[in-house]
Image (cartoon, rainbow, N blue to C red; front, top):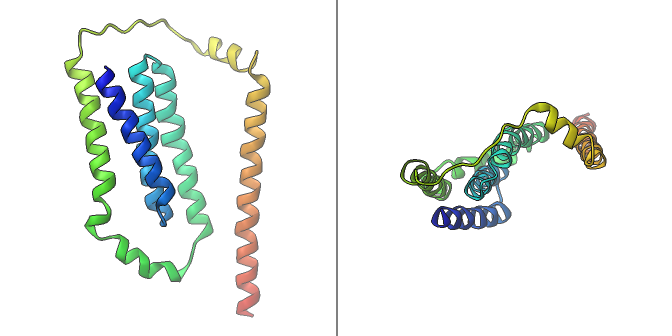
Amino acid sequence: MEFVFYICAFIAVISTFCVIIQKNAVYSLLYLIISLLSVSGIFFTLGAFFAGALEVIIYAGAIIVLFVFVIMMLNLGDKNDIKEAKYLKPYFWIGPSLLSLILFSSMTYAIFFLKEKKIEWFLIDSKMIGISLFGPYVLLVELSSILLLSALVVVFHIGTEKNKSNINHNN
């Protein structure tokens, strides 16, 4: 399992670096999805299956959909349409496809060829999660909800200010 751990860690570092250096937000999101999936692979190899599943469901699923919604809401306009035609060429997809293929093959190897590893598990029901979240971690849950709400308000404010300035320039 150490081999799969190091492959997932390498892919996480490379894809996170690519998230930072990308100029196009959509391609940055592609690399971010690969980064989040490789971090969930790291959780799986360490035996933290619940954290790995939450990483896939919450971050790689819901948060990325939220990011795509924000990019669509900002609507960068016609000046990026010319650049978009350049980004649709196949060589821009080689990086994310190669990293995804390596991640997929390492996870397939871990699932099918490492059967001697036993998974020690116990059942976690929703009551245990609720007691944990709203017991000792209630302040963390509330602060993160306030942070997400404030981010939503800022994005709404930026989107409406841009639309108001476009309306004023057109008149």
